[in-house]
Image (cartoon, rainbow, N blue to C red; front, top):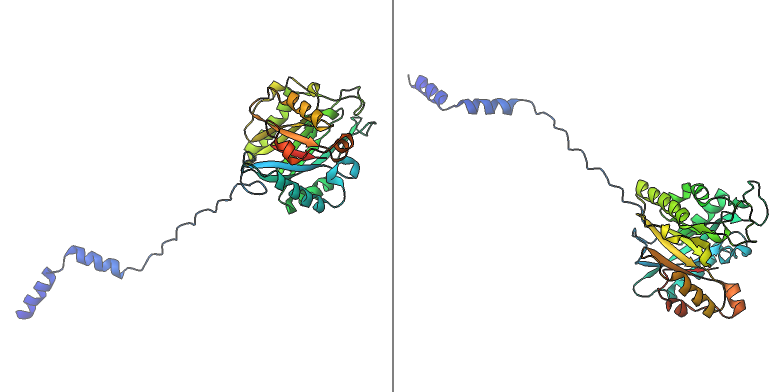
Length: 308
């Protein structure tokens, strides 16, 4: 009887929960999958020296040119030596917290004074030349800017021909309307021109590339030395991701260059920055090359300083 009582007592002390718990303990373990790792986010592309905005962080300082000395300072001698020269100049333009961002402005579409195979009085530089200058710009953490001299062509088709490079985060654009002529005109014999609407179409195209590919800001420069070079300039509107720069290009003694600057920057829209171009040979032959201090004394102060 005692043994039977002990057995009943043991059974009475075991609840259903205890039995179920024992069953779970005896059951084989079920392998549980590890949580999926979080996807690695690729950071958006940046400008050569960091960041995704050009102004007001930087002041662009550069040389223009191409293959051969006749195209300007960029094409003289070794391109790495030219990069070092730009760096030295840039030190003089480091003011108001703005750091210099070097620029190689390569003449990628070259206007000619005689007919070309296309009949458009211009040629495109070969891909290997553009690649060469882009590689050099990257060695020196610089922007490559493709200068377009369209001859008898329109700007936008010539710009689109370089889309492969414009999709890169460190490649910008310059439009040289002095070399944009009509269907019966010859570059160099007449001063070319464009319109604000044509410039706007290019800016809209650049903006579409920036937004579709999450690129940092892309600079679009348009060169001008005469009031007639750009007609109805107010048609050039702001576009997301595109920094517009009007570069004043007049050749001459400092007083003449300053007068051209004052005339062409008067009443400029607030969404357009200013640039100033100096010519090592042409300016010096007429007097003297303006110093960085004289350039920085211009108002508005240039955001782009280009030497040829």
